[in-house]
Image 1 (cartoon, rainbow, N blue to C red):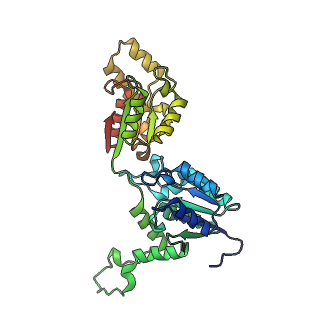
Image 2 (cartoon, rainbow, N blue to C red):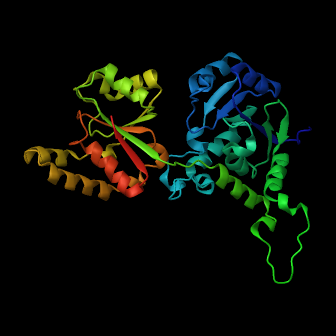
Image 3 (cartoon, helix red, strand yellow):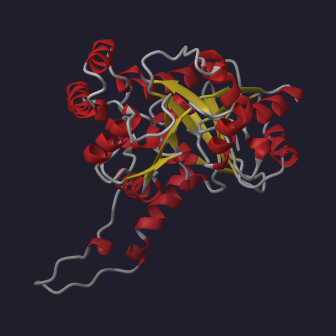
Length: 354
């Protein structure tokens, strides 16, 4: 295959179930110098050598660079506007975000210095957003796109697009015979490339089928109890809903310490969302009223409604996340109110109090 003069070149690869040695040999075969990880979450439950840090170290040892671009170019964005009401990611909306544009621009600029492979998990590029979302939007640039297959062979992007068209036009191999009163069925109408991309994105786009949202309070828990219950529950992110995340009640829950321990012990992300916390004035009034929970609950829910917090979190952000506060139980804690409020607004949320 002859490369076009003066054109940039980019590759894609799926880590699939490769060993790290096989994966690196595939990259070396095509002289890749940098891997751009476009997974929204750079971790693999069953193949830990493809977790972000072990992968970065392994690539560094053979002289390759690693960059995580999942936040910009991932198929599971945290922006709620990028999902439909059923929780399915919409590729056209992802591609229209400024974050996605920033990621594309970073790729284009880096291609002037490095031979880059976009990496995701899927073996076949046609079933992955790296192709149907990212590469589709790279076509407008003078970039030659090649997909590294498990065999080590290359599939050009033009060949992949031919395969994509053939998939949705396979009923068009035979001539259509209709009488004057018949209209062609959907399967008989030949579709163009853009329509084929659209159909494929609808098939493969990530859908949050059921949002599993957890809550936890750290009071009356040892550090061991706290971190063990989070890891055993499969939590991928702790969302701190406290107004003040520098609590003296438990040393391990101070912002920087907590963020460090979560990542080190359970590979769990940390996010502090003050929008989910009561105001200082509301807390003071609650104490002044002698702990009138019913009044506090009404005021707090109004605060959530005024803030429109349901528009500031996505299904992807909430799924397998855990709302953190200090109270030992959720009954008289605003974290329960937050979870129930979001369920009423977004629906399809399964709430678990740890």
